[in-house]
Image (tube, rainbow, N blue to C red; front, side):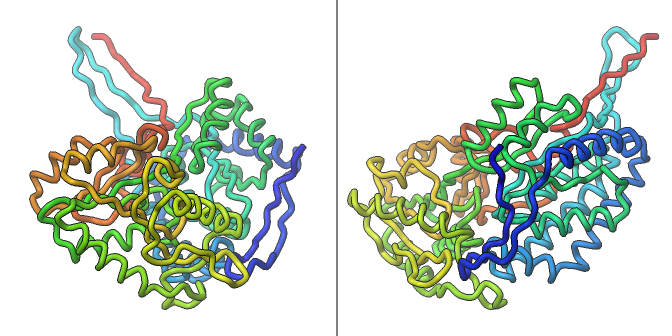
Length: 459
């Protein structure tokens, strides 16, 4: 069996800080038994009790914000100010489901033609496995765990190997909040052990946020065992700047949307598409913004752009950019690894990207913006939809009715108008095509792993 290495490797320096022992087969077996044993009691608690515990989980995240932020700054390089913002979003997610969970679980009455009554009741299905990525270590867990714990499911959580400290910190929060033993269990599992967990008949579903390859592998195993999956995978989201758009606003939102978290977000503004009439002005302003960014120490609260998550990530991004340049793309700024230990890459703007280049077809997970010039709106929409992904999109246009008509034609799970791509506890998150299956957050996040039980009374 292959052993997965759980360790903190500081991406700002490249130094290995600490190794963590992986799960044994015996500990996995114990976790499965504990999660299954906790299920009946947890789902049987009144919704108000589960809500109160989620409020306590939110409280503890808020109380430990600085310590939690420092952990992920060291684990995956997120600038500490942005790490703190992530904690704030996490708090809002747990509070949203605590405040609204009971209403979201209320019976839905159906009109019955033949008389009598019928309701649909949402019930827990059992233990669930979550497989989470490194780019938003707390947020990704919260949007899976919060609705499902509120629903009454129990959670087995396999985090990214480079986020062991934050994984343990979350498990401790659930313990300290008073969740019963077995309701939330962290697993430092290998890929082989994950496959065994998915196959176990006690596990009723699996949610993964990660790469296409990981999603396909998990879906294949789950499909063989008839398990429900939710997959939130990659994205190459378009950011359309149409005629009449406020350029100052568009530049600022494109900049934040592309370079926040060092560009390591599935719904980042990865492909900026600008009409010819505004292209030159947009490129000039946007490139000036990017040139002004100085990558810096992620522990400094003033730092906006830190390192990538790992040296491997920086090397992979460099290979994609080098391929684009070799095939004729133009680098307006950046375009190289930064010569220092760790996972540093210059903030970069590329133009002239064509379908002969990897960057046209692949997701660029780092601080690299692609700007495309298009002749008209039809070309902009066609280019936006010319992707295997369909996660999110942004439309910048001061004519709201016009922007809404364009939004209707975009192949995406989410469209933001005159806003940077983002997230909120009450808004559903998810995509189409190769960006995944299912939705998280909002009321839709409560539905994915619920048994929608029909109860029919004939009179």
